[in-house]
Picture 1: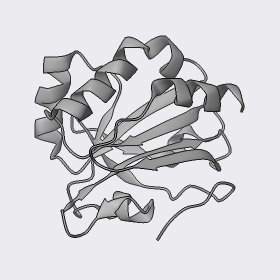
Picture 2: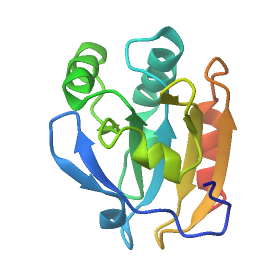
Picture 3: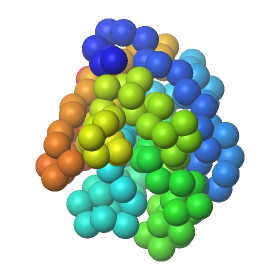
Length: 152
């Protein structure tokens, strides 16, 4: 299944790196959400992308915007990764049922068992307003996220 701009974003509830449940719909009416799917923690391209977001946290973690990283890693691995890299925004685990959220957003690679690089910007009403999907080896630009958020 794939989601198109203008559609309601599929809701989900998964654990973050601390083991807390995070529900997408809990941000409705309060914050725009930047949902960033990435293949795996501890890999060079993923670490670079997530640390770039960390370094620009004023743009992506504030009163108007909530950043959510999501991968098929277990939340225990995400906790170590977040601590090691100084990432304070939520990293969500799409570990079980394996890839369920990634499948709902059309970014799960069945033959590989992980998600590709997909970014989805969801407005305060829960509607998808912008997205980009790249191959696992093709990093995304945080400047593109900033421009999409500015357009909301």
